[in-house]
Image 1: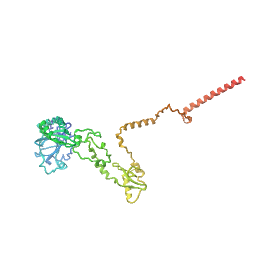
Image 2: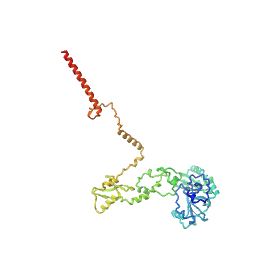
Image 3: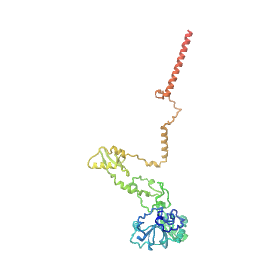
Image 4: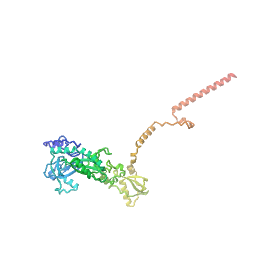
Length: 443
């Protein structure tokens, strides 16, 4: 709606048919909203924060996006008025290709520097021919419609040749004269014979391009352990190497099942919060610092980085006499130790109450009986709330019943028993009186 208000006189761009892409992750530029072309969605593109004060005429090069996050920089020699989202025909090997403009203006220079290209040497860049015509889009969609069937046939051919590889996707060039086969392989593969067979079968030029497990997972997609779509298939365009140092910095357990994603590599999200943790670690004392008190020397046992609390132990190798204190208290003791002063205790009462935390054993999360334990606890809680557990009667062991203490029983039951005893005494007294009367009559 904002674009319609800002550009009331602009003609609506016709919406060509797009039969191969869904949501337009392929970057064909066919999808619009209410007839007006918008920025491509589904992937996170760099924001053109100079869009209102700069145009494509301010820098002669533009960035163009293709399928499978393939992008490149092209020289706008014809000085076309290009905007983000325009579909263009660009120069390719022995033909032309169809892509979508994702960046224009001075920001293209910054993107080229980020890609380690010289923005001052633009002569080596390929050229932008024109904006895509309807005839170009028809030819482009016709080539895209053959990609799935080509992938299925190529997989069968590779299996017949006994090659240890998996062809994950096929991308046709915009004019249909070339096909790029994306494959995954754990080791080196000799596919020279495969290329000859594929060229004879599909009558196009063949290019084999190996991709990694991350790229393959981003192409297939899925749901991550967080319950959201995978970042690599929803918004990420470039992959950054992830190391185990990111997990150590965040004080995570080095468990491969927890740290690995669906691609069997370290999760990309380990890099998302690494800067925040690195900044927070700078505000904590060193791990090797020993806090000296009159009671004992304390060694660092555990660190809660974001809450800035430290757990110290009197034993260097194991947890003994664990004490939790805030970072401010640790810096205070360090300053006292430098002056040769040893405090009486490591923590004061307020620090102990503030730093005390309950730690959960994360290893129990994978146990098969983790749900059974919760049920048992609930059952015990119900029994203690007023449902006493029935006692088992053992027929084999006969034990004499202990004498009951009437004083500890309920007042109602005690009153009933006292009344029964009175009646029994009265009956015994009546019997004695009868026997005494009979004896007097006999005499």
